[in-house]
Length: 517
Image (cartoon, rainbow, N blue to C red):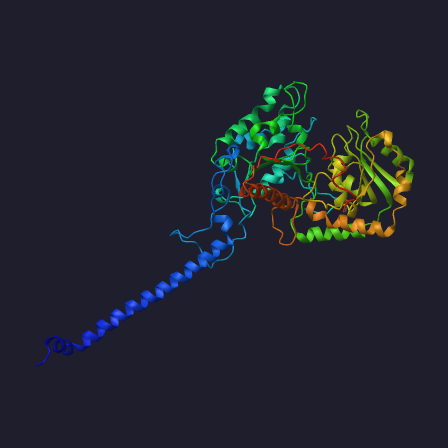
């Protein structure tokens, strides 16, 4: 007797075959998909291993920096719209370089620029023209064949904060997402604010903007990630101007850098103080090339330059400073006659305000003397480098203890050091000392100086260099490394406040530098 079940199946054999095939396909698809997800999981595991520090979390750190955990200081990996980790895509070149810029109230920057007629450099000079061309100042139209057309500007040395901010607006790794930022930039024009109130105002007025700034910052969510230790600002004056240590009306400057919140931030300025959270970056010079070719052309010209003077000095005596060696330098320069060129920068003269005058002297000199002036540093350091003129320093605080991101640690490779702390120690005949310098060493020094030129200029933002790093690039790299080192401390469970804002009484001594190697 025929089995009714098999009979039914056999009678519908085509449908049975299709059913079996369909079930098989489902099984096959499930098997392949499992394999695919397994492979994807394995890939994610590899990524996790490679970036373990990025996605790991750990318990809160000690009380004095609570709420700072690895989760708060590390950017999270990028995910797609579904929340899955992105794999197989191009590496993001901005990872570790993202910067978030605070949108400050206009009173901290824009209003200061708009009221430029109230700003001074300690003189009656109108600052408004210097704010042209994004802070570079007016273009020098008749360089007398001393400069390169379209690359030189009448740049004010105190406008670093404006120049830096405008260059930051074109930085390639800006982000509106502060959670992935490696650093937080605070575009407060501290130097311009101070210049409004330096003379004739009490300390309450001088400190008003600084107090308002730190209050505004401390109320932002970005502050609580690292309590400001990933924040930095840039100032166009020397750091000492922001470190008034008392509230006596006769004391100079503001106390911005002694405010508790400000101690947690780093500041970049044209001259650093002896505190660890202040860093020096180059003074703005008048050379702002828009192309690499302009830099290369300028370097070649400085190599071929005929240098008729053994040494030169651009500056003025400082008789009001008891230990100033400038008067002695001027005396020896004048006594050397044709061996030395003096450019008089006495108050009331305009010789040194004209870049053509300064560069003409430096381009024709083998050595350029760089004694301290009103403070340890001076823009003339960078003018001499631009001219391929070998700088001669008399104090380690003038350059060696300052521009650690921009100038070589081996100071003997690009400069001459003649140690003179004050007039009582003056035992140098400049003419004789410099004449004894071997010609082969002079050539090596000059070539090293010329190689430094791209590192000390703030290039134009009209086009971006793909081969050279300018002063801005190196400053950004330096501050990112600085902040990353703080994160390293946090990862290791250490207190990031230790050493962050400590004073260093030995910063301006020569002990740190040994023999310059």
